[in-house]
Image 1 (cartoon, rainbow, N blue to C red):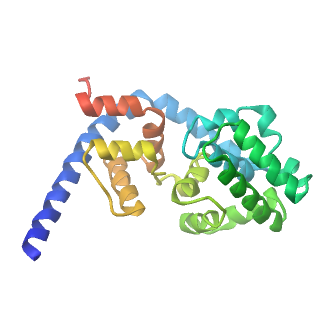
Image 2: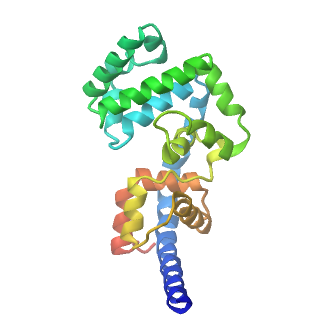
Image 3: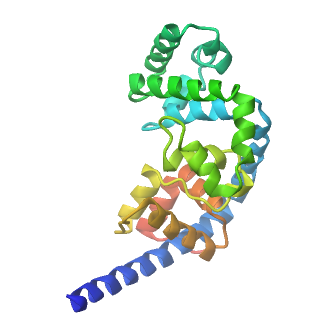
Length: 243
């Protein structure tokens, strides 16, 4: 049994090495083309100063989970957004909070609205028990290092590996600049390259390796893949144009 398994393992390693090489070439070129856009995105680091930073980015996570267009309906729509701010929900009874959260999620046309309303209420209760959004943010930022912050965030209802990373990556937090928020876009690139991974950590590790080879940090590669996916896929399919 060792022989065939060894051959398969070597073949998989060769496939990953080949895929990494192809991707690195495309990423280097795209990073050069989109340098200004990446630098602009890093300015979002200032958002971490918001007292409601944690609550706002939890809402953003639920808005975009499953369909990024949900952002416009929930976050980008002032009438919907103001009904589910922490302060607005705090002023309501428990029953009214759930009713309002359901109404807003449905009006915003996010995916799985009632399920997300339950998560929003679960997060509200957890944050309320900590003394509110500002106090909860202090607890989060006091966690020592990336892994501790990930564990803390994943205790929030509905927050898993991807969004625990993405919440902190959206504000370019220093502990998360070598992270990848593996989502459907990244999975589509992996599929196009003929790759599969046994775990989230393996998937993330592959892309962190690509980032290092391309002279980027994980955040920069993640944002390239998120914001310029069509360019990335086109160049992978047809080959990057020559300089």
